[in-house]
Length: 358
Image 1 (cartoon, rainbow, N blue to C red):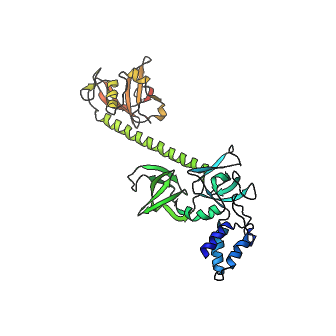
Image 2: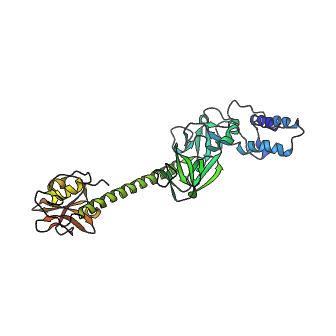
Image 3: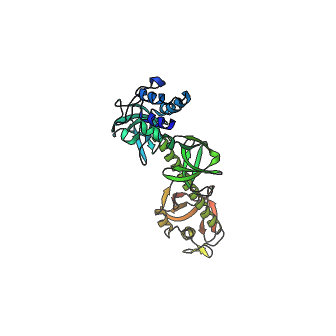
C-alpha cells in the first residue's frame, strides 16, 4: 500500500508547501498538480497507515522538491544570465544535481530558464536540459553515488592502480570525483570522461550527489597541469643536459686535431661539440661560425649545462666550447692543451646558443 501511495505522491505535485514548511514548488509542464488534498485522501482510505508511514511518503518530496538533475549526455553550461550569449560560469555534468532558486513561470515549461545553484556555481540553465518535478523524484536514488573528495594538496590520477603507471591528470585539494569502485589501496574514479585511479589514502569517500564544476576550478586544473607539464619538460631536459655534459667529460685530456671529429683520436673545437651532440641524436653544423648561427640564442644569465659558448677574434667567430656548469666549459682548446676544462670567461664570450630543446 505504501508503495502505491508513494507512486501517487509523485504525481500529486504539492501546489503549496506551506503545510510542510517549504516554499512554492513548480514542476515541468504536463505534470498533474492535484494538491495536498488528493494525497491525504488517498492516505486516509487505509487505516493501517501510520504517521511514520506518511512521513516516509512526504519526506522525499519535501527534501527534493526544488532539485533539478542534468538531462544531458555530457554536460550543460551554467550561464550568468538567462540567455545563451551570456558568460559561462560552470558546467553541470550528466546526472549531476542542482538546487532550483527561481524560474520564469509559476510552472516550469519547456525552454524556460531556471536559476540554479550547484556546488560553488549559481546561474541559469534552460529547462530543456534538466529533469525537474516528478522526474527528479523518480531518478534521485539512482543519481546518488559515492564521491571521492581529494584531501591532499595535489593528487595524481593514474592510468592503473600503481604509482609506476602514467598520470592522466593532476587535481587540486577539494576536487570531487565519482567513484566507480574501491580496490584495496586504490580507488577507480571517473575523470573527464575517462577512468583512472587515485590512492585511497588521499581521498575522503562519501555517498552524495555530483555537483557543478566552476570555470575557475577548470582553469585552475588546466594551469596546474600545464605547470606540471613544464616541470616535467624541464626535468627531462635537465636530465638530457647532464647526460650530454657527463659524456663530454669522458674525453677530457684527449688530443686536439685541427679538422678532426674523433673524440678519442682527436678533434678541433667545433668537431668536438658536433660529435658530442651526434651521440645523442642532435645534429649541428660543422664549423664554429655556422654553429653560432643555428640553435636558439640564450642570454648569459640563463645559460645551462650543455649550451655552447662562442668566442670571436677580430670580430669573427673562431672558437666554441660547451658549458658544463659552475662557470666552466669543456672544449678542444689547442694542440698544446688538447680537450680540457677552463673558466667560461677565459676569453671574452660573444654568444650563447642552445641546441637542446627546453
